[in-house]
Length: 321
Length: 258
Image (cartoon, rainbow over all chains, first blue to last red; front, side):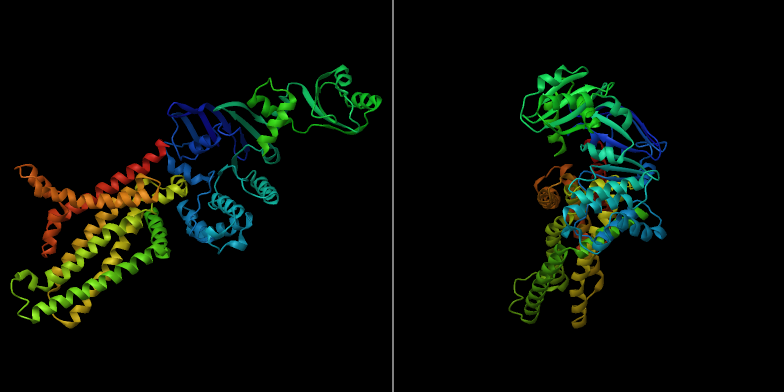
């Protein structure tokens, strides 16, 4: 459905994206993942025909984005970083205008507007002027705008920015609902979003693709290591004791009570570790296997391999904020 | 054609919903009313009193020149400032609020965007010109005059208004700052007149006719006297085309300049 070949874009001397190649099948939901400034938005802008690449080809449904832009644009619903809203229009008038612009047959316009209002839960504000809506509502109008032409391909640039947690969950639900009938690319720097909604991930770093695969495969890229988070009852330095257990690669103490243990995924050491902790008299409060496998891979790929676990988690917090 | 209509409709309705349009319409009707009635009163005084007629040229004894043309040239002056104010929302503001992204990712060609927006802006100029013509209709109820020259002159001002539309739209496409777009529009509109005025400065056998031919004033002069000339029409239409074309190029360039 979407095919990108050797795509490169330079802004003057700066290379925003460098020789990207990927292919997305019909019905896939793909997460474009990367730190800020990695080239996610640039890639999306090129796919939607908003800007031209310096070199390379992007094809949608077999049509070259720059040879036959009109064909391609009819198939695409695009939510840019800043939702393109006419603040002086009402939600309904705005959606009608977008539907007309996207050449939706006039018989279907009314139906499509109802559908996208319903899906984005905007029915209560349909007659309101967009200027007076809150940021979360504006973001949802932006999503409704991308949906209103019922496009084959949806390109969503950070769709959940500015929404409250409930709305974020609703939008993720919506994306899951659309899975199958639409091909969706969404960019984000929030990892849990990708885990919740996508079946494929493309990780971009400094304009280059560093990994692209299904989520399961990417999680396995963690080079045979899993991490455990340990919390003890009493403050007792057991770092050395833990490091002696066979199969444990490294232990780092976040403070006196909490540790992050990295170990080989070949042996299940949970029992051994628990036994050692109890024996040391520190007392066991919590011992869980880290679920953030994707996060670890992401950090490894984008922030380098040499970073130790502790630093990783600090960086993670920044990324997630 | 359908796309042009969609964009025209949106911008047209947008104008008639914006407070700026009503402010401008309000200001122009007030100003036109004041100047028209003052002009008419002066004319009536000149005509009725032989004392005032001493030393007055015969042109000023004609209602067409002394009242109607003054009315229209005042309208022209207002267009020079009001049209850029209306044009600034068309492209500059769209760029600023990022709604331009929506247009550029919709199946619509750049020329359709520009023509749709130009026509919407022109419709506003047209409606204000129509309002300005009401004064003639009302005068007609009071006294007889020849319609022909007045209408041709009004048509001339409408054409100049259309040139302002194209030029202001061009100014609007140059920047995403509405204030800069507004000021540039005024500067461009005024320079159109200055450029023509250079024909007075240059005396050369080649340069003088050239400046005469690109002078708005020169071409409008014929129409003001009630004479419709083809070269005048072609001149105005090519100016409109030129600036619409330049605007289209700038809109298109957004795709590869970004």
